[in-house]
Length: 296
Image (tube, rainbow, N blue to C red; front, side, top):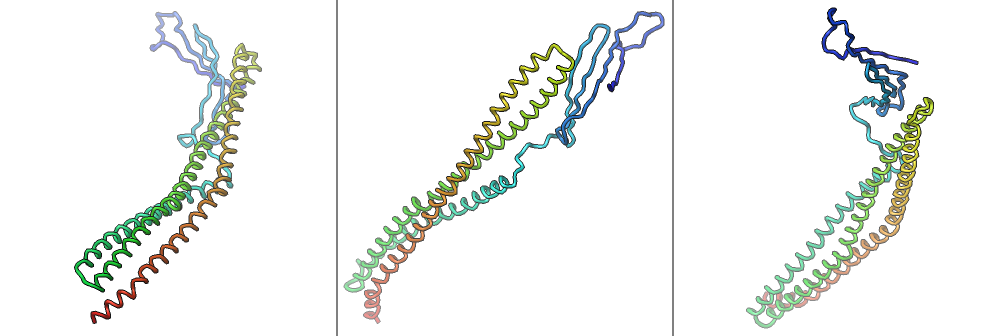
């Protein structure tokens, strides 16, 4: 049994030969120091005996040995999970960028549609100042511009509902998974910290049982309560992991299908709009060419 003993007088001054009455003394003994744990979570467990002329008590202490100045955060060390986290964070960035440009595309269609509507009105007013063939050509041009304006506004709405909104949903789904990751990290940290506490309580209980201390009963109750709490925390962590796995499966299956459909509808809508615009302008060419040849 290792022991370190320190004696100290409780009086602030030294004894005088003329005052032979003894001063109260304090004796501190450190018994059986043992290093427990590893790395930044290592600590020294020891039993100290504090005694004086008027006081005697046992104190059990735990001292944390902090090597780097603070404890290292507890995180899951799982290559597959780390890969998944990297994928989710990267995917969120790419989807957010795609959604931003989808918004700009919707805005561009709306602005172009409004510009064509304004152009159509202006050309119709211009047709009123012209006569016969040229006036009729300007009027037809204005009508076509207004028709194409309506098509662009309709396509802008379709883009919003069938392209931009699905991208937003996709981003929200990724953010939901990220929120579950945070919840999972907190649950894992709580599980590890509680497991460490339970281990310390177990060590303390073993010591009390060896010394047949009166505190065994109380310590045993605390230990059992912590064990129950530890089991609940473990179940909670496992539930979160299970829910997250389900979210990932649903995300990869359903959302991937939804996004594939959204891109398909986007491409089909753009192709149809381009054809309708080309046909509309092409139908005006004979009339405009006739006007051009008449005035040459």
